[in-house]
Length: 454
Image (cartoon, rainbow, N blue to C red):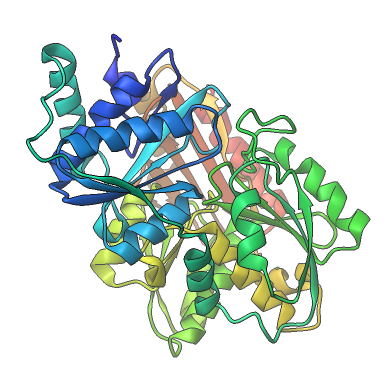
């Protein structure tokens, strides 16, 4: 097929429509290139429940085997289960998923041994160049001694590893509603929760890559509505929603109200610091709530602020030896999980914290939710740089206001802040604002939007 890899290879992964933008032939070339760039003698490959995933994953495996790599297929898995296999087996890995994207999409998330990320500057650019060359000249001939393709079950070991990191055996019994969105949470949750003092109410656990109930993207409030209704209807203690590949988790309290991912970050950070004797570095990106660095300092830890994006979080985790990292997009990273992100481990921390005391979740998380936030607001603009310059001109030199350029432009004062950053792929500016109260936040938000949309 004729493929435009500039549309297919993103900053952190491969993602596009099947078969319009890519197919099994191209997946085979990606497998060959992955083996070449990682110089791997063995790799591990997994896939989600999308109809196209098994064929694409097998084609990738054959491509890698043709370059001499032995391939271990772990079959149906969540993305963090693939990271577990990469870490536990110390092998480079590839996960076939398009996460929360619609059914016609698929993609590849790749990592080096120990779940170390493969992004544009850490191998993905080289992989793209190889594939583009082979599309021009034809696929390379298999090596004289191709690798083997075998299979291995990892779900039980993955579950056992997570349960070894968070002790839930002594918590009070909890009733939890889980919305898997017909994604991989329906595969992993029953095994991870097995034997714990939890009454599980499953929603949409049937694996179905056509997403018949709602998109598996809990970041969109529309996709949380069913869970929000079900939790109080069941008299449950909380609800948890996973995205399509189950690497992100979202939490709602006993009333069905969403819990901010920043509050979850602060709660888990406090628990991880306590587990490490009150010391350690915690990474947070610059659009998480100010609550996060406050809680980290209160618990004796050191907060470190990064740009938005998992490659930046993982790089800082490695550089600083951080014990935990969180993003406002509900990605949670753990040193004890090879610095990789796992929504399931974050969910276990929330369950342990709730079950370790008698109050409701709404009261527990209130101490970690101290400010009013706008959420992310996108604006289509023709001139990203021009609008950012206009914001800078409006706020520069104001008393008590500071500006910084870590990721877009952040404008901060004593009791409010906002960040505006450009999308890498679309003509958008993304605004996040936070303040001490709702009225101040609304004023700050509206002032910034007026400049952005002028």
